[in-house]
Amino acid sequence: MCRQSATVCLVKSPVLEGVAGLPLVDRLRVLRDPRRRRGVRHPFVAVLLVAASAVIAGARSYAAIGQWSANAPQHALARLGARAVGAMGVRVAPSAATIRRVIGQVCPGGLADLTGTDPGGAESMAVDGKTVRGSRNGQTPAAHLLAAMTGDGRTVTQLRVPDKTNEITCFAALLEPYELTGVTVTADALHTQRGHARFLVEEKRAHYLLVVKANQPGLHRQLRSLPWKEVTARRYDREIGHGRKETRVTRVLTVTGLDLDFPHAVQAVRILRHRTDLKTGTVQPPDRLRDHGSDLAAGITPASRPARQVAVDHREPAALRP
Image 1: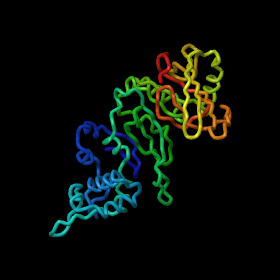
Image 2: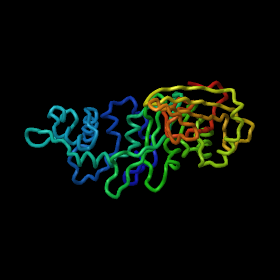
Image 3: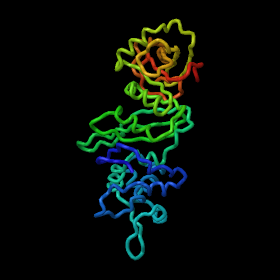
Image 4: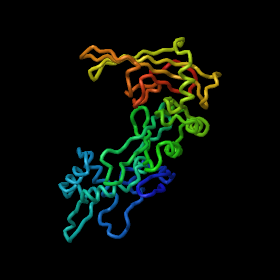
């Protein structure tokens, strides 16, 4: 399995390889039971299956999962492998507290590996972090996960970021087990790191599309000083929704030979947006917009990025894709 400290998944292991064709029950049996042997009453796999069944049935909280578990019929509990007691073999469902405790101790990266997809052959993959809502418990901070998802919305994997570090230290560990040749990996400005770029291109033979903000002041100044007004490769996107009309102008510039201070950079992309409120007719100029979602050239799910946005791209110069 994976090396853990408390509930933190730090490193992935090839033990989980080869389970893609197995049913979910057999996949869950690969996971290590994090509980101590003394006092264990409910089978580990049964607890996970009860929680998964409750979520599929519409439960959106641990309280709702516990209610579903308490009201589940005997035949359902029997199929899920719940504990049997007495001469009559009555099935006893795990309580909400037991379900919460077990799920909180299971490595999220391990679960994602068991149910995730292989990114090999995908056109693009997005890496982003998220804080799990409702995971804060007293003085224990909320769990922060770093996840990877393909461009068509399939989850690849995720792992929990240790409380005293950040996403940067987990980037390589997240992607290390996978074959990423030819895949375009996108990430927000936090991961615009030279080490990440070298790891993707030199070790994984992948491409990258990374956002540049003020966290890289020298690189940001270099990109802003490029002759963007002379760029002829442009794309215009217009969308109407959520009470507003938005126009995005995307420009692409080849930067090979310009001594850009970033490894393996081939293209630079700039996105400029104009927004009109349909109710009031007010037009927000680009310099007044703050952090809103923008689509990048690789077609990845939007993330929070600035209105005036520049990205570095490691791909051969080509026409901008939809």
